[in-house]
Amino acid sequence: QVQLVESGGGLVQPGGSLRLSCAASGIIFNIYTMGWYRQAPGKQRELVATFGSGGSTDYADSVQGRFTISRDNSKNTVYLQMNSLKPEDTAVYYCHASNLRLGRTYWGQGTQVTVSS
Image 1 (cartoon, rainbow, N blue to C red):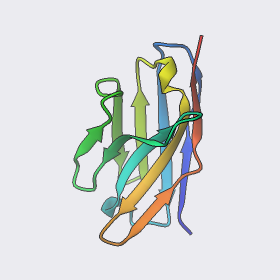
Image 2: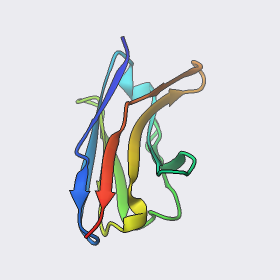
Image 3: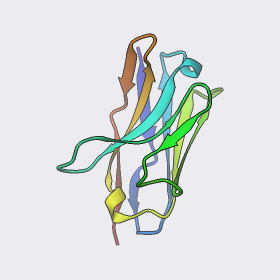
Image 4: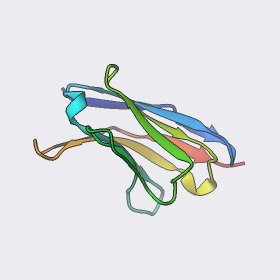
């Protein structure tokens, strides 16, 4: 059974920070690209950041310089450090795991991040 379980969401003030965690089980973690997506009310789900199995990282322009994705393969966990948060960062954040060569993609259930004063 594959599970991606997010944690760390919550309410923060603009300019604050949060760190999201996603613990994966049921997959060979080190061969999967891990990522974070988010979806705000009334908007489509968008890519926030990815960390490839080979070590490459990519970020959406809107979070570049503020967010950092990292992974600990020994713990089967991916993180998203979010700094300088803005109200427009408010969304449900979803953990994502994919291996296109295997044709496998998995999603977590999401964690709410709200940035408001």
